[in-house]
Amino acid sequence: MNKEEKKYPFTKRLVNIAIENGYTNKDIANVSRISKNSIAQVSKWRHGESLAKETQMAHLIKEFGHLLKRQTEHLFYIFDEKSERELEHSPKFFMASGERLLSQTLVKNIFVNGRPSNISLFRIIILCMDNSFQLIVQVRRGLQKIQTNNQYHFRNISELAHSNIEDAMWIVIANYNKLSLGELLNQVDEFADKLEQKQLCPDIEPTEGINLKFNVRQRLLKNGYKPLDIKELPQISLT
Image (cartoon, rainbow, N blue to C red; front, side, top):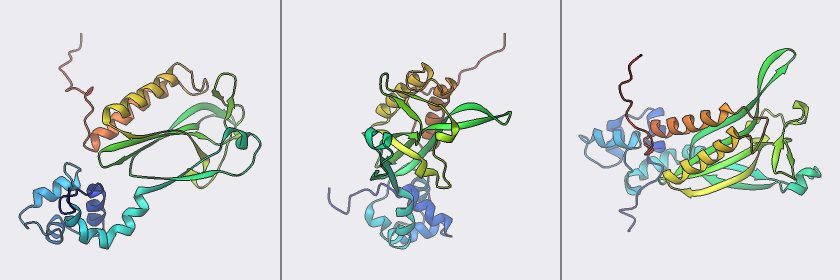
């Protein structure tokens, strides 16, 4: 495939950045060198229904590429288990690229000073790039892992990381690259089942499993991806 035909994977995000900065659909059609009457095509780009060619996005990349880069490059870090246990502050940093479709925390319900509170213990990140997905599972820094059964256990809120920088509190414990839509949902459902069965962390509320399954599908649907297991709602009568 030559450059003229190459599709631009961040079409949707770039077009929306242009809209947020004052461009109209007609303006985008003009700078993309498509017919000014092709507003419907711009609308498809904007809603993620189709991808533009790189040559069509050239003007917007030049003007807004720096803003797009800030939104599509994400920093993560990993401790090996020995380093974390010995409190050696030597994380290994990694970058992942893609549009962030989801960031969901999974919680434990506790009481703080007699009041109910949710404490985030795990976080799920889903990135999308060029119609493939990346699933990243993170654990809150300070949550203890029991080596004998590979389970995580909450002991005290004071042991957990706290920071004004949200992303700095989370350590990557699993990463799945270049997933199809079906593969993504299989991995999500497998992880959610472990939560419901308390295999990964007995402290996480079991309802977080179904919450995760629902939220992932809802976010995919709103971004133009329809999982095969979503059907039209049938008529249901009260009995």
